Image (cartoon, rainbow, N blue to C red; front, side, top):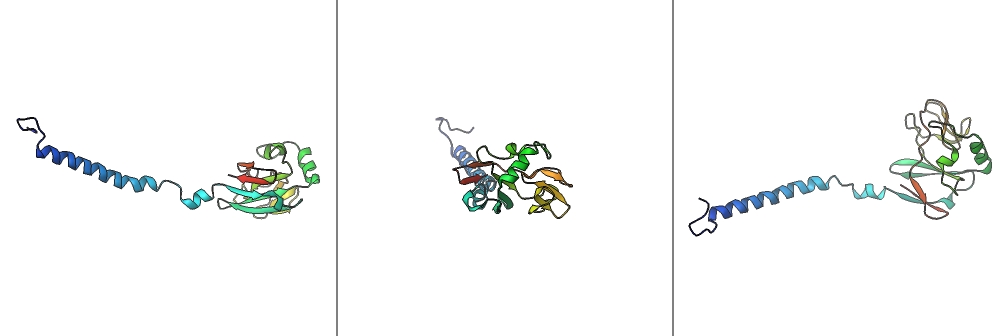
Length: 173
């Protein structure tokens, strides 16, 4: 019934095919913005990683940079601090050595996310009983390797994914 006697497509067949194609095109037009909105925004992609010049940090000091809306502590530790944290061995939760928290060849630098693992407060630098950080909100003490030593915080300060691009340049994220 859909064809005339010569076997050619009828006008009705053409209308069905055209309507189907129009419906498929409309479906793509509706789906495209929905799928596209799932991609990260340009400002989010810009914050995915950050580069930092480590030469800006002097021995015994800390610099706070912002990455993905969080503070990141970049600390240049003194030889005395390094001796102390290395001598303590594996401590914290989970128990980690200082070498597990730093990159080989760059042990003097520590890079950690500066949020207390208890409730997300920002700990104060060079304070507390272990010479690292002290969170004044609830009394958590961290050592100079960012490992929890005392207080309610359940975990060590988090070490973000990072890599050295050169001896003085680090890429976080």
